[in-house]
Length: 402
Image (cartoon, rainbow, N blue to C red; front, side, top):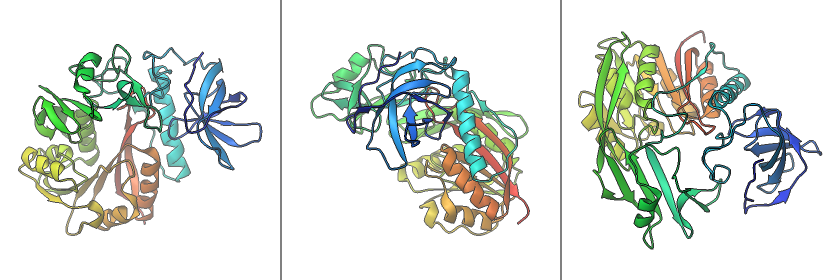
């Protein structure tokens, strides 16, 4: 049985419901006795669960969390972490890894189908670098509460203290819970742990206290000819980097395979971050211009890929013109949105690689691309966030019929 601590937003126990399917966001979908849709956390297709409301119900739907599992899925397993039912992170930890990936695939396909986007067959692929879905997260942002160091409960600012073994997703090389507690002196609000290829940095409320301010991230990938390449990236410990250690190399390989860049071609790397994809493209002889709004990201990209040009601008406001052969889009969870898609399509590149961490935003933007004459050429999905509902998808688009 799964016991769940009540959420303070709203608390009322409902009758049992049967989970019909999985929805975007990792929720199990059910219907209550009134026929209203209920989105249920920690519940999976086919299960019969009793639930507790965790938000004020809407007229047409409500949100709930699982109190007890009355009829479990054959894919349900005991959670490895004793606080998985309370912590806001691991909403899929009660499922076998293979089942997690099946559900993520269902969500991506549902979003694409609802948006009317055509696509070839694909699966959710595993990434190298984690152990049974654990110990992969190289960036951890711990919160400090009155009851200790931990992570936020779902959609609250309540801190769930770490168990004695620490967060099981955290990559090896970081501090123990006792060491984190020593850093949590009065007045401290957060502690970031960033694990690089050869060092670990700790920041307390944004101030580095251990390790270098910049971490080296070595990335091994294959170019579009299958030749293995290795490149080092200097990344601010406080900045963004793909948290799964296997992600950067696999993503770079997937982007190059999809775009098949040629020496001398011109590419735009939009939302370029620290230059991961710019570096991969440049290694193939492509002339790259990267654009990002974050000063720290652009500064890092200029160091990491000196052969490319980088501009600090908001992509949404940037002037996108001229002759462009290839475009890489790696936006935030909100996606690129219509105006950016229209601007990219207006350049008529021969290939666009879209790297997405949100299936709904991806499907919406792919539908926009279809309206501007682009079709999906290839699609790959990766389990870059095991034990959670999150998934990364890389789509290649090519010009089609308008």
